[in-house]
Each structure stands twice: as C-alpha cells, then as structure tokens.
Length: 550
Image 1: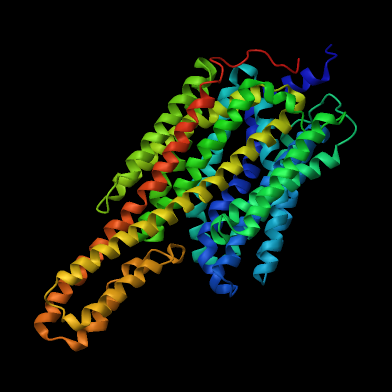
Image 2: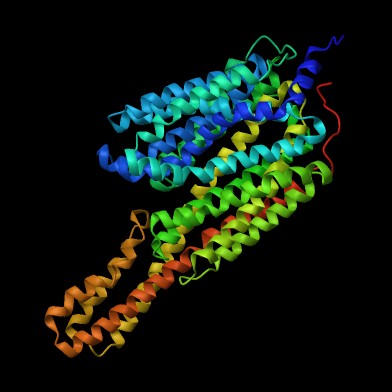
C-alpha cells in the first residue's frame, strides 16, 4: 500500500492523461482564442458602441494588462490551493464575465468586464500548463509541452474565422455568448476528469507585500509598453511609468531576498534551464506577436488584400505551429530541448527575413509560405523551451514557474508590438520623406505643369510628410490625388493627359517607398528571433529523467 500521496496522485494523473487533456481543452481554447476573436470584432464595436478607436483598443489592452499582472499570483495560488481548484475557479470567473461582456451597452462597461475576464484567464492558463505536464510521465514531458503548444496554436488559428462567422451572423456580442456553454462544459469536465492533486503543504503565508510590489511593477511596465507609441516614449507619463516600474520591481527583489516566506524565490533563477527558457520565450514571442501585427497591415495596405483574405493568409502561422508542435514535443523527449530550440529560432528568423524582402506583387501563396515558415519555427522552439523550463522545477512550485513563463511570454507579446510599431513609425516617416523629395523633383522636371502652379503642387506633396501612419496606410494611397484636383481645372487637355501619367508615377513612388518601410520592423523581429539563440544554447542536451518532487 502506497504511503506517498504526492506520488500516488502523480501516478493517477499519468494513467489517464488524455482524459485530463480533454478536460483542459475548453478552458485553454476559450482563454487563448479570445484575443484573436476580439481583433475581428473591433470595427463593429466602434460602430455599434459609438466608441473611438482608442477606446475600443482598451478592450484588448485592458485584457492584456490584467493578464500580465496576475499570471504570477495565480500561478502561486495554484501551488498553494491546488491547481485544479484554481483552474475551475478561473474558468468560472471567465465564463461569468463573458455574460457581462455580452450584455454591455457602453464601451466603458465592456472594458470593465473584459478586465474581469482576464482575472479568470490569468488563473486558467498557467494552471492548465501545470496540470497537463503533471498528467504525463517525466519521459513524455516534451510531448505534453508540444500538446499545449498545439492547443495554443489551434486556439489562435480558429479565432479569426470563428469570430468572423459569429459576428457576420449575430454581431459582436455573439463571441461572448458562445463562451457560456463552452465554459460551463469546461467546468463540468474539469470537475469530473482532473484528479485532485495531493500537494505537499506550502508555507502558510502568501507574502502579500511581495505580491503587491510585483503586481504594481508589472502594471507600470505593461502600461508603459502599451502606451509608449501613442503617448511618446520620451513623454513624462511614459518615463514616470518606466521609473515607477523599475523602483517597484527592485523593491520586490529586495523584499523577496529578505522575507522568510518569499512570494517568488529568486534562487530558482539560478537553475540555468529555467532562466534560459524564460529569456528565450520572451524574445521568441517578441518576434511572433510583432510580426503578426505588422503583416496584416502590410497585406491590407500594400498588397490590396481584404481583411478576410489577410486573416486567412496569416492563419498559416498558427496552423504551421499546430502541425509542428506535437512532433517537436517528441523530438524534445528523444533528443532534448537544446537542438529544437536552436533550430526553431533559426527557422523563425529565416521566415522573417524572407517576409521582409517580399514585394508588392507577391501572391497569397508566397506570403503564406513564408508566414508558415515562421510558424513552423515557433512550433519547434516553444515546446522545447516550455518543457525545459518546467522540468527544471520541483512539482510544488511549478504553478509559479508556469506563471513566470507566461508572464515572460506576455511581456514578449507587448514588447513585440511596441518595438515594431516604433521602428515602423520611424521607417515610414523616413520613407515618406524620401518619396516626397523624389515627387518634387519629378514635378519640377515635368513640362506639363505650368511654372506658376508648381509651388502649389510642391506644397501638396509636402503635406504627405505629415501623414500619421497610425491612421492607416490608405492615406498614402491618396497623396497624389489632391494634386490632380488642384491643377486639373487650370490646365488644358494635353496637360491633363500628362498630369495623369505624372500622378501615376508619383503614386508608385510613394507606394514603393511605403512598402519598403515594412522591411525594417520585420528585420527587427528576425533579430529578436536570433537573440533567442543565446539562451537556447544554454539549455540542457537532455531533459531530466527523474521528477525532482520525489
């Protein structure tokens, strides 16, 4: 008769891992697909709720902000209270908040309920990963990490298409109404199929001061990343937020080193595999999220794709990750995490470089194949990094470890969008300036335009320098048209024909320069992927073949 409840519980989970996986699927899919579904709903919410673009952006920004702040505390609560309990509670909160979202009549109410949704999601995501890894024997932990990666990719891939169908048929609240039956099903499956884990008792206290310092520091850092481009990176608000984040997180570090029952024991960052996996996950996800964001803009603005066509093409990224992740998990179990992590980072960087040099005549297949290469690299590296990081920790703190890895991933998402948008804004401003200079030279050299009108044409061209790329690339498309309207009534038929040719030449100049401006953010994402090679090289050649929890 066994006398070790922890080992008995682990063996019980290992005997029926597919049932545990089945119980986790609704919660994982709901919380991870929610972000991509919402991106499709934004235009309709602006119209139906009579809200600004900035206000509606906080439907997603507020969700991401709360997620980043609460991953650590929720992971810790899972270790203290039991991962099953926290998972079920989190899914219950997420489902209940979905009802509030669906019934929201104002943008302010919707943002508030989305924040409550994020509280539930912050409990579901890290505990789901911990439960899934515990359900499999140590020798198959890489495969389990691959399954989690595949589920994450599947959720991201199905979000835009599912959201498009629901919104087209029933409007934007339908994306929240769907959460109710799926969430209730997930709660029932979790209660029935996930065994209650007998955990070693942890310290009685929760270190509330430490949790508050960590939450405050992450809140300031996340808000600065979200608002860095809209407010300006050198604005007083952003500088103060970054300074406050630094002070709070430093205070958190000092407090944790001195308290007897730390919220986060920094000693486990001395485990090289965990520290390396955390760093690599952040840099890889910096490349992923920034790329997805910029690629959709490029396809709609430069390649004349519809939003639906762009959504279908960009789905190649999560689909490739979905296909690759389970195979990657098996490779990790057999060959260890280092080689797949290195190969995945190189594959991702290669795909990004190829995307950076794609031209404006590229077919959907050409864009999708390069995007799939990026996704395949991510599907290869992320399961390896997840398995390496989680396997480095004893069972009693894996909930917190999952919280750390998910926090790193979320910061990578936010950093990717912030950095790539900043690079894009600078490169686009430079590109428009070059295009305006070329356009003025072409105008001055044209004999079709009367000399007395050339200053007015030059002034119209110079107005392009003030284009705000955040308002949409369609503004660049219109830059030549005001020129024609300005001088057409004052020239003859022959000059008009010459003018139309000049207008087309000017538009081509602006469009070519604007398309080239997208190259730099994509190359920046490739650099981020390559930076993951450094921590990935520090991963072990083999996963540990014993469970440190004993």
